[in-house]
Length: 575
Image (cartoon, rainbow, N blue to C red; front, side):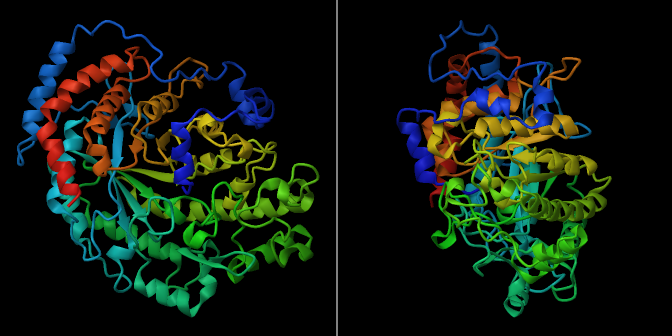
């Protein structure tokens, strides 16, 4: 997801921002019906501890044995061939819930660099990659997440797939005993926060878009967005005789056939890209060329002729043909705030009128239908392969405390103070046994600018309740790179889902967490030590009552033993 990095990280160094008009009680009082129902029996845990307030309990009696085990494991990982794995403690259960040792725990995956495979289809910085993967395995991570770029694999001509670098990288992961979450990345890389490289869509797709610019998402001012082919053209044979959905299906089928020997064992999850940044959403807040800046409301992206044709048909079917010629014209600009606009303002805003409900229902349903089409294809392709399928949803937390939730609406999530927009998404994923992957897990409400009524914690809670109601597994990611204990503690709390217990009292956790991302900063001594402790704490589960200080003491010895390996990874990544 796109955020203002300098602001988001900068506030961490200062004092907490004072709350504005939004309070916990006010948010709870207007929660969607499904959320209120789920929250009625047990209140959410909102007592988040701050840095270093807990006294350190006595050292664990099993510390010595644990250190010995870690030392033996580290020596094994230093060998480049025949690496032995730590006793397997985690595996995906049917439905995506994780089966672990008694006491629970959430497996940690680490997102790989965007350019792990070069434009020439080779592994980038091979030596660094090998050392880094060995270091990650030694830290106890479950596996890695890797983008499989459409623009790299099928870049030359339709139906011609070059898996070169991915063959080598996935074999490397297999050799080290690392599991893999493979992302089918049908979007371009470049233009979003953290995009350090540019990987365009396949050249032959770009040629078709150049011939027919209406294949690109378009805003009301005619600005085209080329990150992802417009969902308005999903079912039209506009890409050299194939529909976009057929192209995505053929790509996934080719991936399955090429890596069938790794599916279900090394490759345990397929995350299906469905929009910009790989997320199921419209490109409503593009940072490229400074179009959008946090915390602007964004803009609707339905003004290509294919989307407008669908809107016209929907308006005629609704009995209001005059509503079908265009989207809202009073919804402001990318960097407006809700109260700047007639459509999103809280009093008598167009979003809360019959027209607003019609348009927002159509706009969000188009996104749901897009997800449904691609998931149906993915499910049939990967059926009986032993892999799970997941979809990533953006954590759009700014202006969450307003009535209209404008940034969510422009992105395609019909979530307002009076309507739960995440339950329909969760229900759609549940129909295909897919995992709901959500971002901004590391964020706390008070870290964000309260004048923009940001509320990432409340948003994560709402999403968790929606997935519980739809009986769909929930996984998480951090939205921005964080290496501090404060963020790690928040991730632990969020992934524990401590506020939602079912009627039998069975405890539920996220099924996995993916850490963003592997880079030289992660392997810096201080950051690495904190990360090792974080992975260990995540593996212990919600019922572990050991404090951070105790876990970090254990991690210190482990970090010392693995120092040569980690230094090799850090040095190799910077060259």
